[in-house]
Length: 482
Length: 143
Image 1 (cartoon, chains in turn blue, green):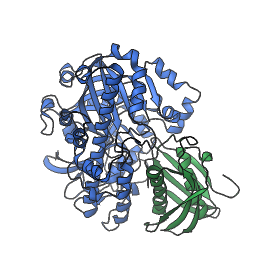
Image 2 (tube, rainbow over the protein chains, first blue to last red):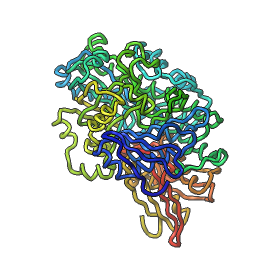
Image 3 (cartoon, rainbow over the protein chains, first blue to last red):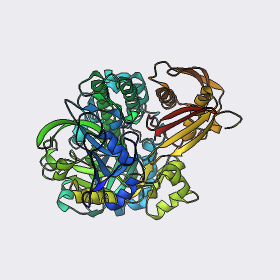
């Protein structure tokens, strides 16, 4: 799919790449005029077109407004493949399988916490390992435990005292993707995962203490337990080295079998296998293990957050009321039923840097959110704000029940390093009222707020396009980074 | 690096990063790829290259796949077993197989500061070419 990709403006929030060449469907991009300027500046649109060439893709190859140049699939891409005739692509899920976000709400008020933010952040930094290759010296899974965890997901952690049973109901897929089979996982992946449960990792991963700065939808906010001024915690992390190895193993295998299935790949990183084939089944069983690892990882970290609050503030669980609002995956492939061109079809939806956003009354929603719709968690950059949205009917009509996942990078890491040179980033963050602890200064520089799009611009598009609606804006008080 | 040895650069990519390596021969190219991979994560001048770990790939699909597979081996040794490397001595390399000794040492938190994580080595925009001056490889890393 070489050459310049032609994109047409449909309306204020939609752009279309008309099907051409090897494309089997159109490309559809959700973006404002301003965000489209960024998208045109790198190969994101070409990547949307490349995904449209894969066998069995239905509807359109989609890009969310936070999309940016990825490797193979764009980050911020959504693609659905027919369950009978389509494919699964490990690159369409990404290396950090079930990277996702968990939001905790609390009974605590911002005024109570702000004066102690530094202390709280120091404590979080002490109890939740962060940074490159962060391993837990204190906890190492034995073989049997790790295999149980891969099948049970978040429940495994809860049964060992890490959290409340009530957390399960408000985790996507109840914290466990079906079909997980540890026999499909390599020894290498098992080895990498053994000491990484309950660790944040590096890059854009974080644990952030914040507060509800503004409520846009009082009914939905009340259902989510969010009041203006209340303290919140966001956890952003995934399946760590375990998931990276599962994807590495699967890409190796699928590069090998591309010729066998006569799949012509515009980019080798789009390697895939037909759904139902042994390679696809093996990947999906291993991917489910990695997804469950990530659910358990965020569950374990949520326990660390509660411990940190209890120790710094000398309060108990009833006082702080740190309950899970929701936990979403934004790198995953899932079988779902969607209406495509007037027909109900079973499809394998790939969300790579995209969040599920089911509307009210969807059968997969927990009872407590049946009337409101699914909470959608959209972290911004570390200095500005994040959003809580709610799934809307438009997502089912336009995007296979999906919406954006974050701000999306706009500046390369090297450019961010250059732009931040000589700047006292920690003091700048403190001046904004954000206490920060980071395992490395380079991470901090590369993750500076200006390196990202303004998440408000991204959220305006998905709100305007009807994929999800704004519920509340969260602003940070303190953050720990890798 | 100079003196006819491998040369490398780190390249920009919006979300990730790429390495570009040139060397007069294939052995030098893999030496340079090893150094460049670890330079993305840390200052490789702090690595003492006095120990060796055997690294082998026998069944790559082609020469491009071999680059990804070799670097993935190094990444595994780093993430799972805490090794850091600053080069490699290649014993044998073909289009689909390599036997090498990676040169480095176990990670030492006192002397080493690792400040970027590489999740994986990708096939995206992978380049492997040869001209009369030698070999060039470009590889995009998922950070």
